[in-house]
Image (cartoon, rainbow over all chains, first blue to last red; front, side, top):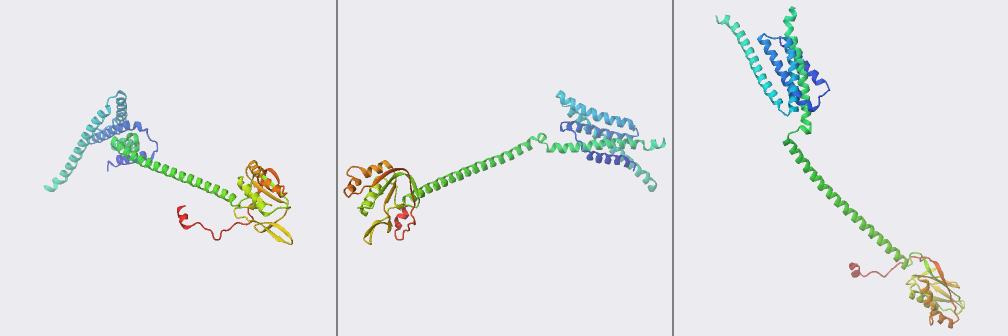
Length: 125
Length: 237
């Protein structure tokens, strides 16, 4: 239930994004993709922080934006320099996303197991 | 303060999610566009597309070649037909002139004969001499003379009338002939020729060279009732 508002936000964002007719130039598609990857990492990081109870909204928002922009800029710079910084970003963000997902899963699992234990204890006694 | 503490993280997370959703859907759209853009297709796909297109091009080229060939054939046929029709038309015109089906105009001579002392055989002789000298069309009193025309005479009421195909001719008789007028004239007036002979019988034909003579067509079309090309010969032609 507490996750309803953020989920609705995600849905609203997707709907709004599919409604706008403005489209980015195809040459920029590569940079946007890496920005999306960075954004996904930030979002998952935010969720993890909530579960770890170290969440700060401002840090999430600023991290989200700067990560996305910087990732795109890094990919662009890599193209200009002829170095595949793009691949480095994909690699790093990919690892972090998996780590974040693993942590989130871990937290959820421990919560659910703890709840069950709380309910189970009186019955078993 | 309490509200902010309770819902703060949700609002921040929701805002982030909204931004993330927008980025996600824009990126999806862009990727869809990329998939249909030729420049971003994989080499394998492009190779297959290229192969298909060049196969199609070869087929179309073959079709073009065939169509052009057919067009050329049709044009050739058409030209052949046109030449054939032209040839046949020219032949028909020539035969019409020869058989008297068409009126003819051209240079030639005019001979005027008086009735006195004239025999039908003299007229026949004159006409023969004209044919001999290369006349291409001859008429007497504007009646076309062809290969089957008969010149004769008719005795009636103590008068002899000259006839052409059993039609009475009125004197003076005018014979017109189309051909090389000089040769025609010389053919008649050469020493010892027909005009010299006619002088013995006190017949003096009046010969004039004309630049333009008009000879009419036969009044009636000649119909062959018995003569026909033998079957054997027809097969050969």
